[in-house]
Amino acid sequence: MTRPEQELDILEKISLILGEGLELNEVFQHAMSVLVDQMGIKRASLTLWDDATEQMRIIAGVGLSPEEMAKGRYALGEGITGQVMKSSEPRVIADISQDQDFLNRTGREKLINENDKRPISFICVPVKGETGVAGTISVDIPYTDEMSLAADARLLTIIAGSFSQTIRLHQIVKVETDQLIEQNERLRDNLGKRYHFDNIIGSSPAMEEVLATVSQVATSRATALLLGETGVGKEMIAKAIHYNSPRKDKPLIRVNCGALSPQLLESELFGHVKGAFTGAVKDKTGRFEAADGGSIFLDEIGTMDPQLQVKLLRVLQEREFERVGDHHSVKVDVRVIAATNLDLEEAVRSGDFREDLYYRLNVVTINIPPLRNRREDIPRLIDFFLDRFNKENSRNLHRMSREILNTLLRYPWPGNVRELENCVERAVVLSSSDEFTDELLPLQIRMFAQQVRGTGSSESLETTAGRLAEQAIREYEMNEGQIYEIVVNQVERALITEALEHTGGVKTRAADFLGINRNTLNKKVKDLGIEADG
Image (cartoon, rainbow, N blue to C red):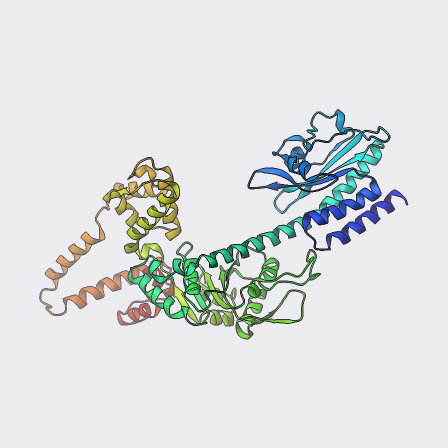
């Protein structure tokens, strides 16, 4: 057999092995056994980068004992293996006994071929990942000549390219498995207690309205649509709906629709069958199927591709779907909770979101107010986060001046509850005493406080309201019995007008901004004679 024929035969056999869907170490050992038979390699190892230890480690090997594999750990840039990982360039060593970069980390007893005294050559090539080098494949092979060694290196580079896709698929499967295991652990810890309505911090009128709606919708199987800015707590509300429902003992599966490409998202949601596309080495269960009997939380639903919107509509209407590459329908009983920070009505008008899907999702809409519209909840949220992060970090930060609290109450919180949580965590981690000082606040909040002090606009809303009341009594003294209605109508008119101007005249956004029901806003606009575009 000529060299080209031999290489084609090797590549064909390895491609079949990669499609077997075995565990990664088994796939590697089977593939390398082909090279042992046809090329006479002595050893082979597959190393992958471990984020936890920030090292490369051997995860599969041929001709290596478990003890030798355990020794195969390399820092980035360390030895030949670490250099290949860092540079993304292959290295070919004709004689490892003469190369000072060769660390012999696994403890090879012989660095020459004991039968014919030929030197042992070492070839190490990178295995590419999605964002860079994921690891390396290396082999020991008896030295013949430079031309043969170069040809062996080219062949191993091609094999490493084939392994890249296999490694990515195994990593995706591992992530999916880890997520499902984590979900089961959360269920065993009785998350229903954590997400009981009494444990959700929110006594403001806006949040009381949200929780009242959540308590009603939780006991049903109705689809829920959660609307609100980033960081307002849409996922927490979704969990409250699930864990207070009859489905609480079944899975709650979360999918971020904006984090995956349309092709990956389709496979993630509905699964696929073996051979459905390149890299589909075995059947995969989709998230809808995994959530059967429970709930699925579709975050960032507004970013979903139009073709996938059609398939989702079918699931909502027929309670069935087909895996990618399959023609058999799969029946599921899944409660859908969707969330977005986008204006879906505007997306429908612009043609970016299907109108029929919008109405299917919009069975029960829950508008979660931004933190700036529920400032009454900020002190309780601060106390909750302080208790939590003090415990986690063994700190005792609890003394906060009235001035700092007023700053936190006035700050607009563009990142909402999530930003407040990060602010408190940062303060606890950086604290060295029990006093909450200005220096513990993030830079943007300190700058906001300085700006407010610099402009002299330190008068509180409470003081302004007092002055308004005094002025109203003086001006409308002759309208006894009507003063309340006159003043409240004027304040409502001014407030709604300002909110409409702030939100570009879009009433749905203005209602969310003010933290009131959209129907209430529409009635006020009509009754007060406010001009609004839509």
